[in-house]
Length: 377
Image (cartoon, rainbow, N blue to C red):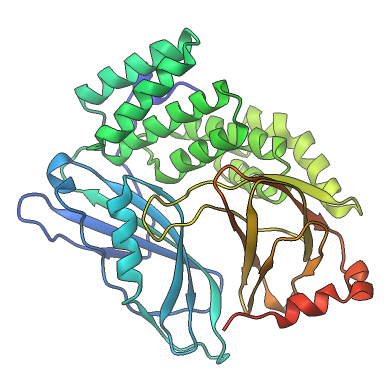
């Protein structure tokens, strides 16, 4: 996919839908903090402090984005944050982790903790820089020349140098993640390509990713999720595609495969997602992980390669954890609501995450009872 600015075209101004906006704090450069909490439970915000801007990054024009998962306690505190995605550098990750400890929510009416909460924190510098600088365009063109000539190692080297130099706004970061996705694909790493493309989609605005580019990118993500067996994600991606361009040729092209996947998920066949543990947070408290929102309630692990240590399932009404043991079945009770499963271990370790149609097999082995009673404090 060739981004808009590579073709010399620029889209209209960015439009964002957010939950909260925290306003200007710097005399030299005004900053905005866009904090969007997408909680599955019933958490209602009372206090939500903004993160501090990291170091001298503001003078360099650096913008950041952090996606974090956290738990709301019975008395309304936010605890156990997990960085699951970010862009902009370690400083933004560390400040996001610091500030969440001060957030307060209304005490849950159920008198139980609310474990399944996602937040996106987008840090912008309001200087009208939702466009690429001449320095970035020069670096971008240099990297892309190597990509086009299949000089993957050189492209990777220049992309890493560009990333480490920092000072990029979110528009430039979107383009950089698209480049990194191309390089990951050229290196044969489908999971790495998928993660880079997902990050570009998450931070891209209408200026950096117009509707046409966004449709193409979603199509690439659809294919990669399909390749990795992430069928629950495929169905959600296809729903996004339909909302964005229901009458588009791409949606029509992918419709037969989307129907096949829906039929597969409704069948009795075990679903196998190919998973790779990666380092989502470079901060000191970060831990390599893989996460997923399954559609089925019973799951197990297979084909472990490397150190895959433990998992934690955070649902709307409950959370559980356990050691990853090949072949052991776990069941999430239906009344727990929607769940995210986090798997922790060494970066680069791989495994298959298996989704089973029902828990009848669990009931005969007693594993469902183990899972349901192994609740975190």
